[in-house]
Amino acid sequence: MPRGKKIIIDREIDDEYVDKLKTINLNKIKDGYENRQSSISSSLANVYNEAQKLYQKKELNDDVLEKKGMYTIQSAYELLRQNGFDISFRAFGGRVERGTITSVKIGKKRYIPMDALNTMMNIRDDFYSVKDAFETYKKFNAKINYRAFIGRVEKQSIPSVKIGTKRLIPRDAVDALTHVAKSYYTVSQAISQLHKSGIGIKRNAFERRLDRNRIPHVKIAGRRFIPTDVLDELVDKETALREKK
Image (cartoon, rainbow, N blue to C red):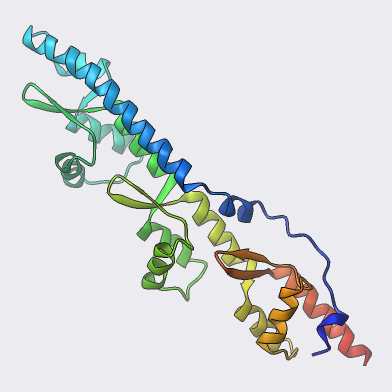
């Protein structure tokens, strides 16, 4: 392969997916949901006190409470299912019993506030579970296994946040990671592609070019990635240079 200094690819990488991944603020996300939980607890206390007075007067029923944003377990479950929430009634009831879904007992029945249901639906829309994130990412990076994926989550090279008792991965992060898997090469993959194109280069020589910014790349969680079109340009330029000799 001709000496690296003969070829410089001068290009800025402007990638909104990578930018989003790098600017995810996990503390802000966690604080937002904790503040929402505090707000739910505060509003729940007000409704509970009002409901207790109505219960003592025997003026309380499910319809009255539903108008105040309080649902029976069955009604809450049906509402979630109508909004595309995929969960069994048994699993839902288990979460209520364990207190991972906010609820309150009024009289002989347990009720769930609408704010808590909205939070559940927002979490579903904003996050993947670790398992679902892995299944989504694996479609574009078939070489990764679940254990390795978990390792990246634990090291925070894949951003995650614990909300309640569950560890969750922001959908923006998974979207960005799948985009990178589709549109970028790792260093090892890039070198392999060069070799397949008949261009011989050792890893340390290739990495020196990256160090000197002769090959545009992005750095994510300590790993470097080269856009596929950048590598295509590098192959074309290397091939043309070889043909001139």
